[in-house]
Image (cartoon, rainbow, N blue to C red; front, side):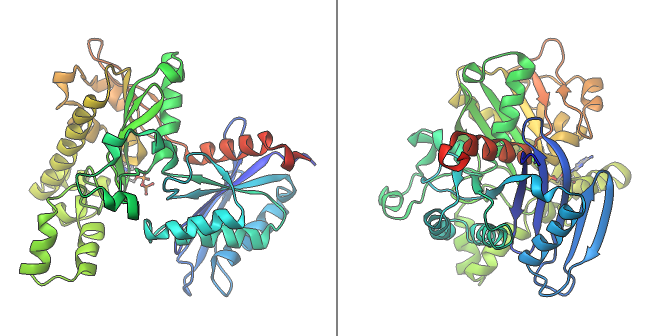
Length: 404
Ligand code: ADP
C-alpha cells in the first residue's frame, strides 16, 4: 500500500486537533478534535468522508488515548498503513528553528527548553509528540514551528527597547506567531496575482481568536505584531494586545493584583470579551450590536477595527510597495463588518472596499474585495494543516537517510 498521507497533530494542554492530509493537493481525508482531555468529560469528534462521529474517550482520558482512538478509526478506514509521517505544530522554535525539523531526542530537549518562552504551548506540543511516538513508533515525526516564518525579521524589528543584555542572556526579543498561516496566505496571494513569491510584498492580517498582522517583503516576514509571547500587538478575543506596561505596575502596586492575576486579566479577560462584557466571539458581539444596538458591543468592534487598521498602517514603514492587503483567520475570512470597518480607515493608503465583493467572500470563499481604484485586497482562507503536511512531506522526501 502506498504511504503518502501525513497525519497533522496540533496538541494543546487539554486538546488535540488532527487532520489526515494528502500533501500534494491539501485534500483532508479525516479530521477531528479531542477535547477536555485529562478530565472525565474527555471526548473525541472525528469526521471522515463527510460522516461525523462524537464519542467519550475511555480512561485514562489522555492524549495517548485520544491518538489510539484515532488510530482505531484510521485502521477501520484502512488509512493507518498509508501514513508516511506525522507533522506536529509546535508553537515556539525560538532562534533555533527557522525550518521544519525532524524530531529527535535533541530536538525534543530544545523544544522543552523553549517552554520558558511559551509555557502554555510548548509543553503541550511535546505531550503530543511523545504520545504520537508511543503509538506510531517507527513513523517519522516532524516539528513545524509557528515562529519559523518570522525568523527573517531584521534586528530593528525584533529587538525591544530594553537593555540588550536581556536579549543576549535570556532570549527576550520579538519572535512572532501564526507564521504558518501568514506563509500560506502569502504563497496563495502570489499565485492569485501571478507574481513570483520572492518579488511579492504583502501585509497580511490573521484575525481569529488570536490576531496578528505581518509585513511580508519579497516573500519573507520583515515584521509582525505578536512579540515574545502571543500577547503583543492588536486587540484579540480575550487578549489585550498592546497596553501601556505601566498598567501592570498600577494593577500590582495600587490595586493589589498578584502577577498571576494580571496575567489572567491580560490573557483571558481582556480584548473583545473585556471591552464588550459579552463574549470573545466576534459573531455574538456583531449580533448584539446589529440587533440590540448594544453600545459596548459597538465599542469593542470599533476598537478592534481601529487597532488592526493602525497596525496595518504602521507596517507600511517596513515596505516600499504593497501588492495586496490580505485577510485571513475566522474573523478575516468571514466578517464583512470587521473587514469594512478596517478598510474604511485605510483610505490614505488607497485601500477601498467594494461592498458587493466583500459580502460575497465568506465561508471559505477566496477573492478580492477591493474597488477598481483601490490597491488589491484579498480574502484567503488559511490552511495551516496543509502547510504542515506539505513541509513534513518535503523535508522527508529531501532526507535520503529516511528514504532508504
Ligand atoms: P482560532 O484563532 O481559535 O483558530 P478562528 O480563526 O477559528 O480562531 O476564529 C474564531 C473567530 O472567528 C471568532 O471570534 C468567531 O466569532 C469569528 N468568526 C467566525 N465566523 C464568523 C462570521 N461569520 N462572522 C464574524 N465572525 C466570525
